[in-house]
Length: 115
Length: 112
Image (tube, rainbow over all chains, first blue to last red; front, side):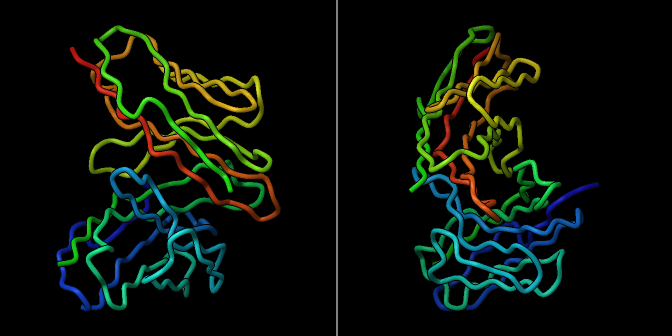
C-alpha cells in the first residue's frame, strides 16, 4: 500500500529536549516536505527536499532542521524545542518532473506538545 | 507573495442542502489549483487539480470549477459523511516549483 508514515504520532516533551520526527514514504517520490498546522493559520511549510541531499527552507523554518540522506526518509529535527513549536506536523511527498500532478500524499500527522 | 483565501470559515448544511465553498487566490502565474479534504486527526486527502480557467472536475457529489481569480467547490445534496475541512491550495508556475500555498480551509458540517 502506498503511504507516508510518520512517527511518533503523539509526543509530549519539555523545552530544550531534542527530538526527531521521522517520515518515510514507499512511493519512490523525489519531493518531500514538512508542514505544520495551527488553528487559524492553516498549513505552513517548514522545509522541503527535491531529492537526496537537496533541501531548502519553506515559510517557517526557524527552530527546525531536516536531512535527506535516503530517498525514502525525511526526518524533522527539533534541536531545542520551545512551546511555540507545539503543533500538528505533517509530512508529504510527491513525484517531480513529468510524473507530477501536483498531488501531495500526506502522512497521518504527528501531534507535538512542548511544555 | 501567493495568497489563498477561503470562505466561509465554517458552513453547516442540512443533509441534501446544496451549497458552494469559495477559494480566492492571487498567484504570479498559476500552475495548478488543488482541493483537499481533511478529516479530524488525519492528513489532507487529494480531491482535484484544476489547471486553467473554465476547467471543471467532478467526483461523486463534489464539483470543482476555476476562474482566473477564484475556484468553487460545489457540493450537491451533501450527506453527513461529507463533513470535513476542505482545503484549497495553489501552485505557482516556475521552473522546479512544487510549493503549494494553502488556504485556512472551510469546515463543513452536514447535519442529518
